[in-house]
Image (cartoon, rainbow, N blue to C red; front, side, top):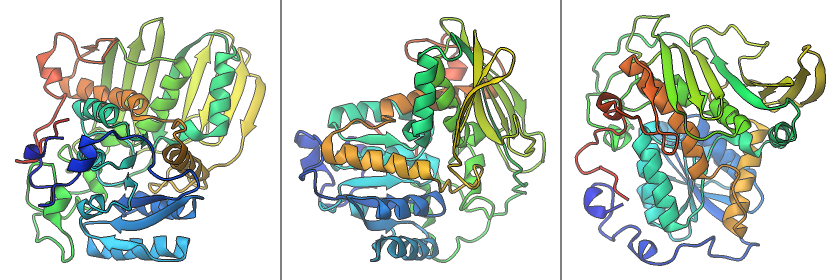
Length: 437
């Protein structure tokens, strides 16, 4: 990232210059040494990640970062309780990037921060564990893939089913012909979210650095129905339900079918359940068509939790000789008479719809990241692969916004012959924050 485009984000010492000019390989120390991390964004998922890293062998949480002083204090306490000593608390994550003792940045901040923070971390020579979605828009995914390739650092996206032994086993079973030729997958998520109401312009709460919270996003007055969670439903900062939860299910579907970029994308839906400030759909069905007679359908129901196959979320893969039902707990194989052929299940989470996502798959995914940083072993969800799944989600949003079918390039995912649709490929940034790799 060229620093002239990030003058607001860098200290006078020249953050990351030395790292950017030298070859960036794996972890600097011996395999027996610990991976020292900083965690960015603590209101929910970030604190979970901090606690898990604190408990992971060969890992240590040196500091936690949040723009809200109250959230920061709680995060310091929670992570400290997990590792036996409190990490340093920082209001500005950029100070952690200046610390040579820190090897990796763990990012669980709002979506509009994901790509800019990752690129800053890579430019400072850090590895990155990045929560999904990897970017606020399709272009940011491309920038992250390019930045990772240039720096050679480890970047793992937090779609933790890629580290699930049962999910890995399920994919191998599909490759081995357990359901014949897989050709169609249905992915879904259903919840019962409440209305976010109509926000009012109010004073910024004491202890919140709203300027830094906005960061790369264009500035707007503070409203009382955005921070800390409802930003998900505003286009300025969030990416909607399909990127928030659909990323997990669509990643499994894409993995199962062995597909990358679609050839056609359609979407139907809207904000049907409530009339409020929510800017995305709460009800959506997206169709993705791929070369080789393969397709995926995503169904998102944010405000009606009626389950599919008695599950609030999951993926079904259909093949020529049977079907496979996959969720966070494992998988079940059915023949064409709907009889169970094989079942491999073990509860991975007490509540698969919990926003914090505290489950054993997260621990496995983090352990994989730590091992990759320490030894150079491959991560189970490298950013080049994760960005493909996130792009499906972005394309679903774009098809919804344009109200028409998108024809897409199966080699890149770019929309063909539709300038309006490609106008959503990237975003407008606050002055001085435009990312360039």
